[in-house]
Image (cartoon, rainbow, N blue to C red; front, side):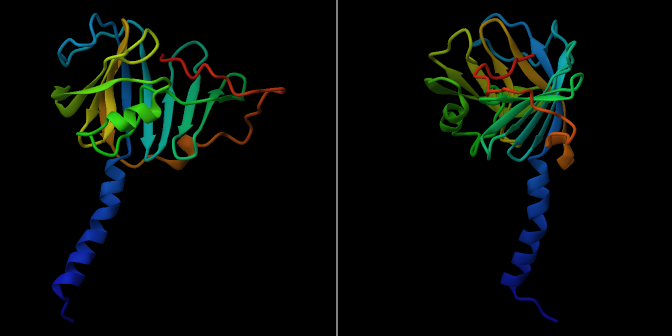
Length: 211
């Protein structure tokens, strides 16, 4: 059976779609930084006085595991505009008004200002700085010219992942290390059935701790 050039191209394209989708899913270690100035060039090195967290990303969903005393876990669904904090020790789930504004996916790494504003908790004045390498990965750096003590002053967007892999704020920041591009299990982003919501409960507006 002969295949036309159009049919052959369609088959090849369909075969590439799953790979492209899976490439956007990844896991990484979040290494927290002590920084001086957000405008300083990226050195590709990091110190981590606050320990590290674990980040899992699946399309529009995020799971952020902290390694503190409580071991709080954040689940955020950007598509559904929902976010919760899991407390494993209490088997409890707390509703949040928003997910972490430091971590988000963009439509275009070379034109990410609009995406950053959409996920920012307050108004920003975004400026594209340009390409920069972070831990061997190609990124595009953006600066928030109206940064405050609570908002990131700069983010680095990975060109392959289309996701922020580094951010810096007033005296703190974080980088993603040990990035593994692979499909993530769906149950990582689901609230366990035995987790309860304390009553009465309202969604907190404090968001989620950066650490």
